[in-house]
Length: 370
Image 1 (cartoon, one colour):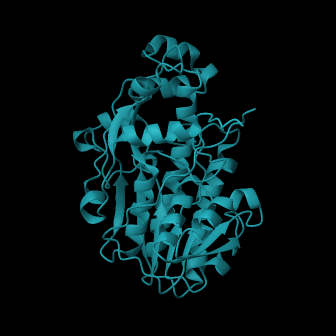
Image 2 (spheres, rainbow, N blue to C red):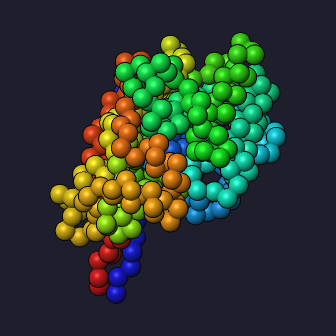
Image 3 (tube, rainbow, N blue to C red):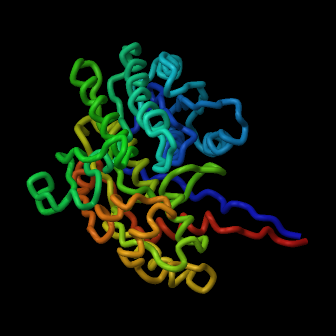
């Protein structure tokens, strides 16, 4: 008899060149999440004490991967109860910390109430976290997880060369087209990052650095990770998209490089401003095509592009709006990650490796039979 099990988690982060200080604890919000887990793991491996702020510190299954990481590393893990929408709930976790890395934020696009499920957690959560920073005199650096979604709303936006010279997303770009009714996730990320910069400008004790990753791929540490990228990849491999996939332009990056960028931004004194974190520019159909050589014989992968007219007709049935199709299908997305390479020292692995590691972990695995 056999059972399914997740693949074992991969190794740690390459933090070469990052001067991680172990003299004070580091607060990490959203530490059980897809990205936050890797940030916490990297810090623990560097010998730091991690104050992990999580919603359910006593939920054994949800924090087990953090304990595993701590057991295998020289650093120390301490768990703290915190909630994005509860003022003051991060104060205890931040006590004595010099660095706060704020990764906690939802990454889902299909919600019934965008204001409640996306905007409030992102915007109010950022305010509550930074209010905690204001109450903690020891904090001198805050690293915020933002997104390239705060830099552009739809792929068609990049054709406006007055805002996107060369049709390329850079650190100077801001999303001005998203709203509660159009790409509310992107709108929530934009509001949250703008608010963080506004609050940072009102004081001079702590500095803010934002990390703006592209679509994040790669393996997860937790048993039940949640992320829009996981949903997209699952639809590519489970047969949902077997008849074809849309040519929606995306830039992608490995979760381990995103975590490294956060830690580098936290401890490199010269780090400042915003950083686009992106490895490659591609599209959804091309991502599926990269899986064909290794998995084409066993998975019902999409092999052709869905025609635009068909997508427009089917959009409401497959979780898209017709406006989204018109503004995103067939338009390329290009991101410039030069600053993250030169200033943070991020070295990006090929998207192929990130995608395969992610898929390998998502596929059912059989335990040896007796």
